[in-house]
Length: 146
Image (cartoon, rainbow, N blue to C red; front, side):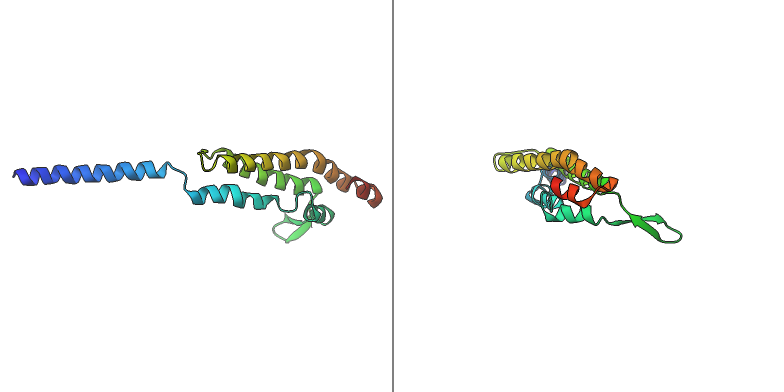
């Protein structure tokens, strides 16, 4: 009887220990999660300050205007830019949520600085450029701005 009782206590102890380990492991950020948020999140900034963003503004994507007929229309440059800003802002928030440690502190700081630089550029310089495209001025005025 005592061996069954001690065996039950031991089993309960092992089960409780496993649950505690599982819960504490779930609260730690995995190296994969750091990589996804910091390194892969930087892919959202492709084309910034280069030909990629210039092409997106010069020839914007199409948007669906009528689901029944399938009609489309070009996106305004302000819409293109807002889409980019929203994506980079979400990525920035994800990086800010990471808990830095000795191994990740510099990586997180560099990623946050990059996100802030890109967001500032999109919200200031690219916003003005998008407005120029949407207002339809002469191409030489846009070329002078770029």
